[in-house]
Each structure stands twice: as structure tokens, then as C-alpha cells.
Length: 77
Image: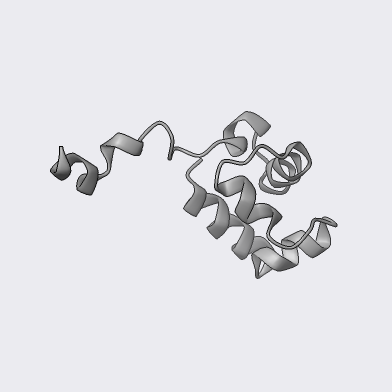
């Protein structure tokens, strides 16, 4: 899943990402750190369970795989 899809789904279900963190007893900014590709199993599991997706889909975003595919990156090359 793309990080923006994860954020949108959490906001739809919980109102804010911070409310999701509060409801799941996570520290402030935990979701942000995971979405920036930091490995954090507890947060990854909470996101996967909240969204009803397998953990492997929510734990990594598309950003690493598509880093070179961004239009601005392509123009520089």
C-alpha cells in the first residue's frame, strides 16, 4: 500500500492519525516513522490490523521501489 493510502484509510476510520495512535497506545509520531520506512513491528501490526490487510502489505510503502520513477528524478537524469 502507498503511504498516502494508509494515511487516508486511518483518517477515515479514526478521524486523525493521532487518534489512531492514542487508541492503539502508540507514541506520538509512531505512524509517521513507519511511513518513512522505519521498521517498527508493533506499529506495523497495529496498522495492518486496523486496515484489515496482511502485515506485509502495510509494512512497506511503494516509495523505495519507485524512488527512481518520480517524474522529477527522471528529468534530472
